[in-house]
Figure 1 (cartoon, chains in turn cyan, orange):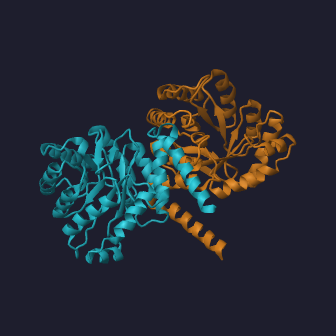
Figure 2 (cartoon, each protein chain N blue to C red):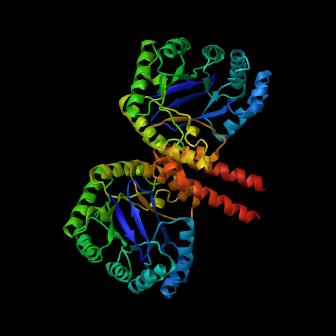
Figure 3 (cartoon, chains in turn red, brown):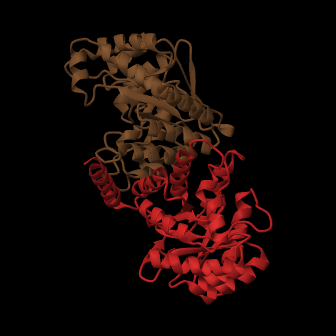
Length: 288
Length: 288
């Protein structure tokens, strides 16, 4: 099942026989005080740096989140979407918990966006899915409702509900990308094994694409990027087709591209070998 | 199912709920001309360096192979096993294609060794399994007979035969470690997906431990260690419980330890966090 995302001029396809889709997560003020202050002052200049770093790191799609309780998120989202679309031709994920901000972002976006996100709660489904349908967008469905179930079967149930209600709103299953919920392995030793089980259930039962916030897994732990890299390769091998992740971490992006090659989504390693040559050329240029 | 290996003083257990077992592969003259020449002259001094590097890199078990067509492998194996056991308390894998060398190694070894390897060919099974049984050792069974089957089901059949014939010789399933055959992904794009499928079949059907020559996967490719690291994490998540690998590649050993943590075999990350602190301390000492 293919999820097609588009900017003005570029198409990215997420699918189980496609290379893993890297969604750059950096355009987000969470945990970034200076960026928060800038957003409160209506200053979007940091976004220019973030976009260029994520693109340089190899992101296929960019997540845009400008949520700050002290800023006018609706106006910021509109401006940010326009700004980012002028900076890059990568398709975008419009990311907010505020419905009016999603609406403003969708209104400003040119192409087919991915909306981040809806949960399995009726109220959220009924508020967000009509917007997604109206703009012909795709949507990320989190596998939780008012609580976060730990049992893979319960997460599958929530995912099934989201896909079903999306269908009622005219949104086909290929435009629903389920987030099976990656959680910190430092807080719950079974976090990843339950995640893998959930991914396999959703893949076998619904067959839809999946994404997750990959860096959650390694939250609070030393050697985060190595844990994140391991998680991404493992998750891809069980059926995860995309992740929201920081493309500035080469070890994580390389792990994803290695998994593409190993899993037969980069046949004969054309992309892997080209990336290796480009890296060598850049190193040689740096040493010259 | 637990495979217990022992040296004079140390026990290592391979099992699906245990940390992944890293079998250091370096003590092997294949592709090493200087080492070959030394072995032909009866000089074992290189082994001292190899042992210390594999131990420092984090190997749990060491593979010992002194096969060279121009050397007296039988005598070399006897001396090498004694030498390595005097250098380290890690359990050993006695690795040869020459049955008399396996016999000499088993005779010299103190503890419970792992024999590398037997195939599904009747002649090899009937020659090697009695030696394994006589010495109370464990054995690696390659999932091929006179040809290397590509279909996972055929590999499972060969594995089933090896486990069954081993049983006839009084060797229990827990002392048979199956090698599902890791092959170069640069030569066969399906090499890893077929490997994963084989691992899952053997795990579900036979439940025995598994190992493989992990570096085969990345043979001839740039960025070998990153591919190898990705392969190891993925393979562990589908049921591989051990690998013969070069412990001098930190990115590969770290990938294995990250997988342990992610898959719940290093609960609360005690080992992961301790390794990180040791690395930081070593770096601080290096900078002081």
